[in-house]
Length: 186
Image 1 (tube, helix red, strand yellow):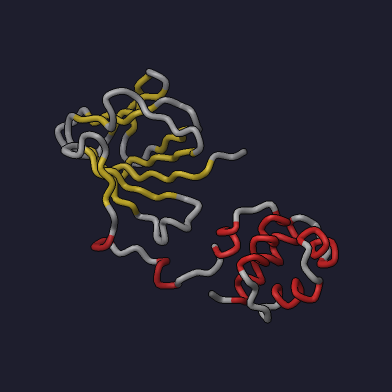
Image 2 (cartoon, one colour):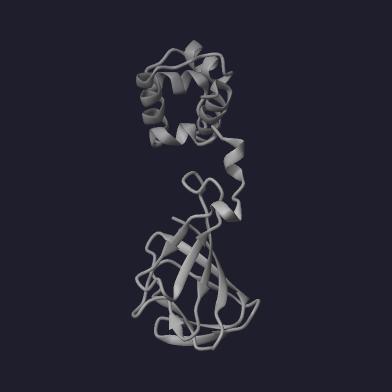
């Protein structure tokens, strides 16, 4: 664990909350000198101290470590990509393009949708994500709340949370659709 990055994360959270070191230390029940040392990367806090800090900042403990980046994990090689299959894996495959997928706040997927197929038999919706889809190859229909719209190569659709949708390929050739999913705005 990189103490400097951890300290920078704590400092950033504290400043976002508008707290002085003294106010933050009192709120967390930790000495001001320990907070100061931690923020400068000169302290190696125990788990119980980290729990107090996360509690005072009102953030999950794991978020204090998000900036502890493994630089090698920032690149996603095509040969190493994970594949995600839906209920009908003969017709639809997603490649997970997002490097460091578990730590990213964004999901990037590319879908290969075979000829004369659809993503689901019924509809799908995200209650906690917003989605942008770009037709990269071919054309596709997107069904939004029961209405179909033709998307040609290069066309983009935004799908807000809770919108029922699915994609259909009515052509004789497969298509490729790039998806970007982000957490819904609160």
